[in-house]
Length: 103
Length: 372
Image 1 (cartoon, one colour):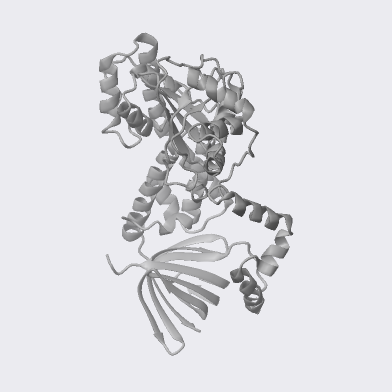
Image 2 (cartoon, rainbow over the protein chains, first blue to last red):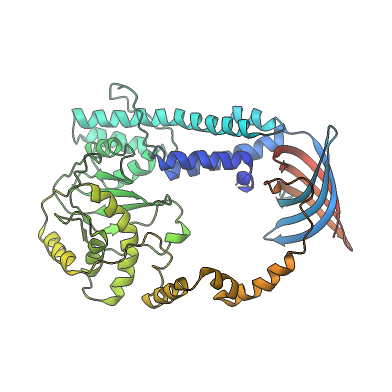
């Protein structure tokens, strides 16, 4: 089963909001919304694996780290995300990572 | 989804794209909705033209069972009708449920036709006159209330509010994964007679009465009754709009009497306090009386007391810096390898979505270094 990890992204959240709106107006059922989200999970995982082909480097300082249920959660400070094309600096970033090795 | 993927691959997200996404998502859902509505239309046609035909029932069942997804196979029997805006996407679920209970096509159609977003619940009329009430809790949980008996075929358009008073025997647990708030609200099998003239002003009373019916006067029934009242309140609220018309059975009359006798119970929308005993509720009320802030600060529990000094310790964080963004930059990804030497961490990540400074990025691989 695909990770539901990507539901808390712009894409995922907007989808959930849209679904909630439709549920509020009784246009869909929560069951259907759940199905949509499951489909979203699959599609996102597939898309990320197959369609994306770029690399990013980042450097910063580690504020906190957590490893629970095979999920890493980091909070980094003063991080630089470097891609070939551009550079992004943030003061604080949270990284949530699920196990990708099992696949 | 393909459109979404294209947008997804585009790096950079702003409000406009977000709105577009929402629109796209909604359009997509609308499309699927149209299909559902179409199907429901057929069902309505079934009801209008023919009532209680086994063929239709079988069709519904056949359609229902394989069609667990949103795609519903349109029964070839029926002439196509104008697509309906209404969606009953819960067709598969409901139909399945209905077929399980042997509902007639008419009932199905009635059900499908009913939920035009009028009230938070739908009525499904079974072949035997049973009424399945699908109650939508505000939080989205669905309760299916099965009401047995009642040879009377009750058909009420929800809109008109001609709800009759079926006897609720059993309230099934929420269809959707059970919201935590309402996990405790699993109504015990009880007979609840909806109003007979009491309308639903005393929703709680009804539920209370219903709860009390099997065990009259028992305090134990009060707590689950309260819980039942919480969930049933929503049902009752829906019924409130409707005027009960159905003739009551003797049981109903008894319950109606009970309703009158029972003192109104608190309408509890949330189930937080329901599961606990009344004593706990009292305690919680006491806490509520106190300032919530005090509770949070002083902590009604030990954990919160400790959190206060801990939180103050966490406040020694870096400044936000010159750039203040509401976004907490988040990266969701998968990890290949996380390595640490002393306080030097190395991250090997893959397949990630990043939201940095409000913009979205993606990567197939990311390598990072950080010092703790």
